[in-house]
Amino acid sequence: MGNLAVFGFWMFIAAVSVAGIWYDAKEKETKQETLRRVVESGREVDPETIRQIIGENSGGNTARDLRIGAYILFGVAPGMFLFSLFLGMVNDDARVVLMGVSALIACIGGGLLGAAKLVERNQAEA
Image (cartoon, rainbow, N blue to C red; front, top):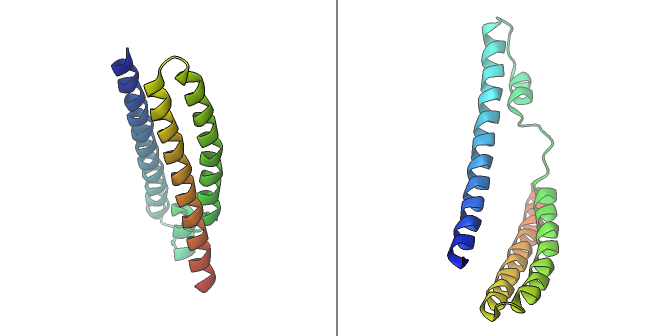
Protein backbone atom coordinates (compact mmCIF):
# COMPACT_ATOMS: atom_id res chain seq x y z
CA MET A 1 0.00 0.00 0.00
CA GLY A 2 2.85 2.37 0.85
CA ASN A 3 4.49 2.03 -2.55
CA LEU A 4 1.20 2.74 -4.28
CA ALA A 5 0.75 5.95 -2.27
CA VAL A 6 4.26 7.12 -3.14
CA PHE A 7 3.65 6.32 -6.80
CA GLY A 8 0.35 8.22 -6.71
CA PHE A 9 2.00 11.26 -5.13
CA TRP A 10 4.73 11.44 -7.78
CA MET A 11 2.21 10.89 -10.56
CA PHE A 12 0.22 13.83 -9.20
CA ILE A 13 3.36 16.00 -9.15
CA ALA A 14 4.15 14.94 -12.72
CA ALA A 15 0.59 15.68 -13.89
CA VAL A 16 0.62 19.15 -12.33
CA SER A 17 4.01 19.91 -13.90
CA VAL A 18 2.94 18.74 -17.34
CA ALA A 19 -0.32 20.70 -17.10
CA GLY A 20 1.59 23.87 -16.21
CA ILE A 21 3.99 23.44 -19.12
CA TRP A 22 1.11 22.71 -21.50
CA TYR A 23 -0.80 25.79 -20.31
CA ASP A 24 2.23 28.06 -20.83
CA ALA A 25 2.83 26.65 -24.30
CA LYS A 26 -0.81 27.17 -25.29
CA GLU A 27 -0.76 30.73 -23.94
CA LYS A 28 2.37 31.57 -25.96
CA GLU A 29 0.85 29.96 -29.03
CA THR A 30 -2.29 32.07 -28.64
CA LYS A 31 -0.25 35.27 -28.33
CA GLN A 32 1.78 34.40 -31.42
CA GLU A 33 -1.40 33.64 -33.36
CA THR A 34 -2.85 37.00 -32.35
CA LEU A 35 0.32 38.77 -33.46
CA ARG A 36 0.31 36.87 -36.76
CA ARG A 37 -3.27 37.94 -37.45
CA VAL A 38 -2.46 41.57 -36.70
CA VAL A 39 0.46 41.45 -39.15
CA GLU A 40 -1.63 39.68 -41.82
CA SER A 41 -4.38 42.28 -41.51
CA GLY A 42 -2.02 44.80 -43.07
CA ARG A 43 -1.98 47.16 -40.13
CA GLU A 44 1.30 48.75 -39.20
CA VAL A 45 2.64 47.11 -36.07
CA ASP A 46 4.71 49.29 -33.77
CA PRO A 47 6.86 47.94 -30.91
CA GLU A 48 4.31 49.06 -28.29
CA THR A 49 1.57 46.98 -29.94
CA ILE A 50 3.88 43.96 -30.03
CA ARG A 51 4.68 44.39 -26.32
CA GLN A 52 0.97 44.62 -25.50
CA ILE A 53 0.14 41.47 -27.43
CA ILE A 54 3.09 39.43 -26.21
CA GLY A 55 2.64 40.71 -22.67
CA GLU A 56 6.03 42.15 -21.82
CA ASN A 57 4.30 45.02 -20.03
CA SER A 58 1.84 42.75 -18.25
CA GLY A 59 2.55 44.46 -14.94
CA GLY A 60 3.98 41.33 -13.37
CA ASN A 61 5.71 41.82 -10.06
CA THR A 62 8.25 39.07 -9.57
CA ALA A 63 9.14 40.02 -6.00
CA ARG A 64 5.47 40.03 -5.00
CA ASP A 65 4.88 36.67 -6.68
CA LEU A 66 7.88 35.13 -4.89
CA ARG A 67 6.69 36.53 -1.56
CA ILE A 68 3.20 35.10 -2.10
CA GLY A 69 4.72 31.69 -2.85
CA ALA A 70 6.79 31.92 0.34
CA TYR A 71 3.76 32.78 2.45
CA ILE A 72 1.83 29.85 0.99
CA LEU A 73 4.68 27.47 1.78
CA PHE A 74 5.04 28.91 5.29
CA GLY A 75 1.39 27.98 5.76
CA VAL A 76 1.80 24.50 4.30
CA ALA A 77 4.86 23.58 6.41
CA PRO A 78 3.10 23.66 9.82
CA GLY A 79 0.13 21.85 8.33
CA MET A 80 2.42 19.11 7.07
CA PHE A 81 4.07 18.96 10.49
CA LEU A 82 0.69 18.51 12.21
CA PHE A 83 -0.22 15.88 9.65
CA SER A 84 3.00 14.05 10.51
CA LEU A 85 1.99 13.98 14.19
CA PHE A 86 -1.37 12.43 13.37
CA LEU A 87 0.11 9.97 10.91
CA GLY A 88 2.78 9.13 13.48
CA MET A 89 0.07 7.53 15.59
CA VAL A 90 -0.21 4.90 12.86
CA ASN A 91 3.36 4.63 11.61
CA ASP A 92 6.45 6.06 13.33
CA ASP A 93 8.52 5.99 10.16
CA ALA A 94 5.97 8.10 8.32
CA ARG A 95 6.05 10.68 11.11
CA VAL A 96 9.79 11.18 10.79
CA VAL A 97 9.64 11.41 7.00
CA LEU A 98 6.81 13.94 7.00
CA MET A 99 8.55 16.04 9.63
CA GLY A 100 11.52 16.19 7.28
CA VAL A 101 9.24 17.14 4.40
CA SER A 102 7.70 19.93 6.47
CA ALA A 103 11.18 21.26 7.25
CA LEU A 104 12.07 21.08 3.55
CA ILE A 105 8.91 23.02 2.65
CA ALA A 106 9.78 25.69 5.22
CA CYS A 107 13.31 25.95 3.80
CA ILE A 108 11.95 26.38 0.28
CA GLY A 109 9.64 29.11 1.57
CA GLY A 110 12.63 30.82 3.16
CA GLY A 111 14.48 30.59 -0.14
CA LEU A 112 11.57 32.18 -1.98
CA LEU A 113 11.43 34.97 0.58
CA GLY A 114 15.17 35.56 0.17
CA ALA A 115 14.78 35.56 -3.61
CA ALA A 116 11.99 38.15 -3.33
CA LYS A 117 14.26 40.43 -1.30
CA LEU A 118 17.07 39.96 -3.81
CA VAL A 119 14.78 40.82 -6.72
CA GLU A 120 13.52 43.93 -4.91
CA ARG A 121 17.08 45.05 -4.23
CA ASN A 122 18.09 44.48 -7.88
CA GLN A 123 15.04 46.38 -9.11
CA ALA A 124 15.82 49.29 -6.76
CA GLU A 125 19.37 49.47 -8.12
CA ALA A 126 18.22 49.43 -11.77
